[in-house]
Image (cartoon, rainbow, N blue to C red; front, side, top):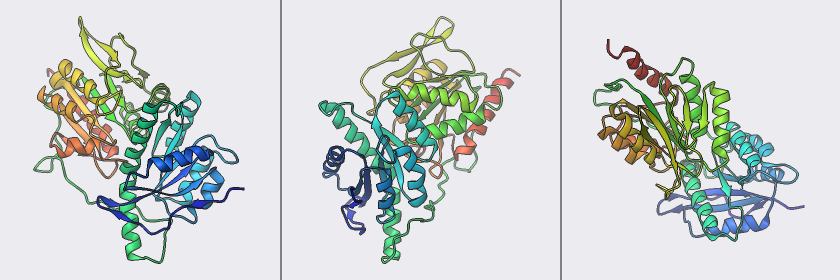
Length: 391
């Protein structure tokens, strides 16, 4: 029987860029665990401190070794990833979990379920290690997500150890972040000056949960304008996400289809591996999907969607930037404002990663920077101007 494998001490090192992020790899393949460990050796911010070959072993490890990030496979003997996930989060509540598995429709469904159970993100494994580009992209994406999700945990854990070096806590209190007012100089939330005829939403890490929260509250009342969403997700995931959003938020959400005409009140989700753009078509608006080069390393990317929508709806467009790493959506939001549109963003406190919303907020582009529960009420209030237009 394999034994849990802590491969580093609990002491936290500090790189030039900040505290090192402690990672545990959970995968039934020793080859995969070895390849991942070697892939992280050139990243000073990441240190693999433990490995496990199944869920049961992982549960034993987290009672002995403090970790910031757990990379969790889905299909494993004895205890699979989806079974282990809730117990891992119970035993190690300070840890963030990234699901990693081969890209199949079944695994995509399980990964979405894992997000609802508390996993922070997912990354699809390349289908073949013989594809160097696919493998390189996998490790690049995984490193980015580990750093984006793990930096806050690592800093907090480092501070905790500095205060109590003889003790390691597995139930740390949540990080208390300072409140940053990034609204308007007088502290008042601003609303668009013109009726809103289209809503565009950009999201990434933490996005599926945030999208569900926003749409569920938004569609408590009839929505009379189209809603366009770019969520960073691979193929197979987006179709399933659209189904979940339709069922759980009680809205008409589907993957966008090339050439289809836009209908008011519907939700259009960019398909994985395609940019979703919009173009005028007679007196209507039409979906145009393309597989042009990734933008901000993403396909779909929010920027092409936002720019195409800004050209059509101009000052009648409302852009919403939700949780996500990176800065996708920044250029598109800036362009939307140049065309007269309005932008709001999710605040840092309620974002899983304050990359995308932080980029537009710190650039001074937002009418409001709001907690997640306040996003839908803001949109509803902005849409009321549609009903009052012309009075």
